[in-house]
Amino acid sequence: MQHLEELTVVWRSAILPREYEPRGPLVEVHLVPAVPATHHGTPELDRVRDELAADFTRAGSSAGGAWAFSAAEDRGLAVLSTGQRTCWFPFDEDDLAARVADRLHTLLDLGLAVPGRLAPAIGLDPVASTIKVAARSVSSPGRIRIGTEDAFSPGELRRASREIAEGLVARLAAPLG
Image (cartoon, rainbow, N blue to C red; front, top):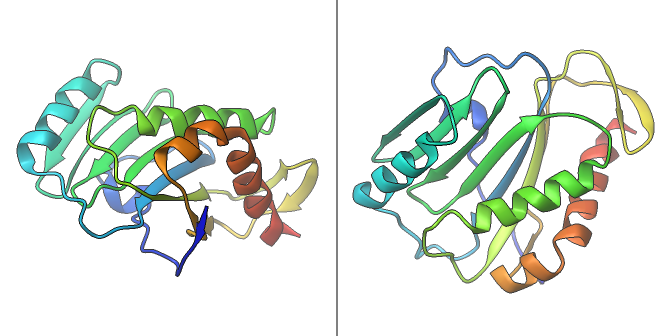
């Protein structure tokens, strides 16, 4: 693990078409390259789009990234040309850390070169009611975005995915007090 300055995270709402409106709160998990040398070109992004299209109902790509989602299930994946890997899924408090850990593996297995160090980030958006996070009932501030704090090698992310996920979930719950 390496502590670092907070990196720029591109959140789901900036990646997807504007007409995509989730039916409820979504957890966003991001892996942001901690080294600036990562860049995926249009052919790589088109290939990822085509691979993702098999598992989702809608897919698209541009020079900025590739994405795919299933609106009916409120889940999706995206890869940006910068190397950021993103996924989202419906919020459910039951063993959220296990689901986040599983998504970390999914993001590492997207079939593109993996940067040497990745910094995880997590968010919850939209949230407009009282929810339970980490066994606490809280009133939502509208959205929660927890940026990057530490960077990990892909091997560290795989080996310690559960512990990293537990830390992310704890950070997600902290601002809700």
